[in-house]
Image (cartoon, one colour):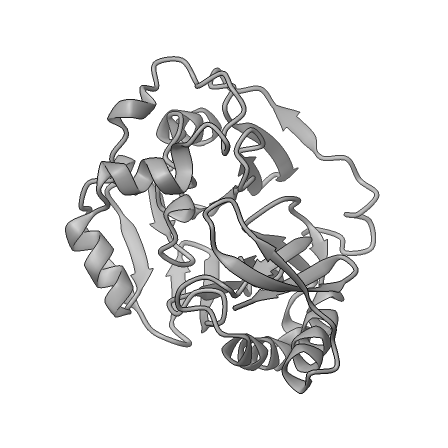
Amino acid sequence: MIDARDFQTTVPQRFTSDDDWFEVLIISDYLFAISEPRHYEHTVIYLLLGSNRAILIDTGCGIGNLRRVVEQLTTLPVTVVNTHTHLDHLGSNHQFSEILMFDHPRSRNISSEGAPQEVLVWELLRKELVTPPWPHGFRHEEAALPPFKVSRWLKQDDVLEIGDIHLRVLYTPGEAPDHICLLDQTHRILFSGDILLNGPVWSHLDGGDVSELQKSYELLMRHYDEFDVLMPGHNAPCQHKGLLPIALAASEEVLSGKAQPQAGVDLWGRHYNKYEFGRISILSK
């Protein structure tokens, strides 16, 4: 088990992969954090090992060979679970055959249609977003997200029983309308995707909504005694669960009009109001 008292002061061991695009941290003997530190998004992918199968939570930006890295970490068959359909979380889905997604029109659409190459370039592969070099053998001008088959469509409160791992699906819109968190009931970990992290929550994106975000935080608070550690989808893994009540209070301040925003524009030209609350901030339309 991860000791919630010690994880903030413990430096995880690094695993050296032959694909230097990814940084791999060994969180425990059953959990790896695979991050993309040279991308502006700094996505974090999690590989959770069970007794007879592994679960890969998200697949990142589609840069580098994620499947090869995963195969260096485990020989178990792998099931992918996507937290939502933003492209930086499913870029390498086509490298895997067993994929689970929340049942939502956006998920249905992208699994059947994929994403055009020009969309991938604009959202993920522009020079402003990537610190060179590109990983060996990767040709960004040929990058694509083809359609992929979904093996199972998930619903709110589904419990995935994969070997000895039990993951509960919690529907948590606000940053994305199809966003889910995954509560690992076996190891008392909340895989929190993009709504609980050390940094900004991007509710200014298409489909984002701070009122929905607040409801999602309230839902997670009802499970507060069931987890000890947060594993976010961006920036730094292993965040203390105490970030959740801070985020809930922050969303309430934004909605009440008490918080003072700072206007800005992101790298994609989208305007936002930014509300700062220490370790976490909220961006709204």
